Length: 129
Image (cartoon, rainbow, N blue to C red; front, side, top):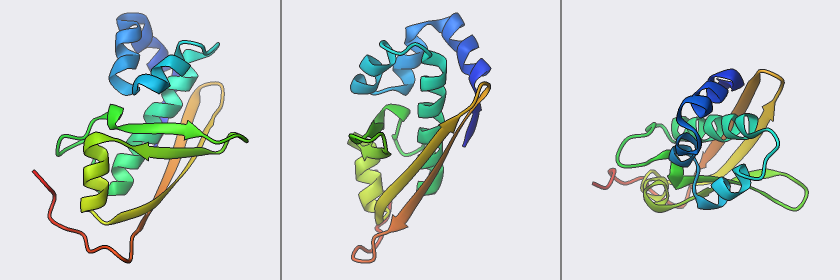
């Protein structure tokens, strides 16, 4: 997914931190508040979460929200995804296995690419209600 950082900046100017809280889970929001370039940080997270929902094949439906997907980094900065609440339930129901995330940003654009492998040991079930 690709996001114009200026679009996120405008939303932050209009709605303040409330906008960020709709996108980020609590640990991400704490990190967001410490950033020198909060719009770029938020744009990358938004792109990553949108790309994840698309890779799952369902988008943000069935009760899953942006806050149910968390972007984390290991000690050397490699990004990865954590699934919480409804996103975790749906990931398991869909038979999704490992998820891989790549993110980047430039002056005006943030981009994220997500690949989710099908878990060969699981048979996808119908989506839970």
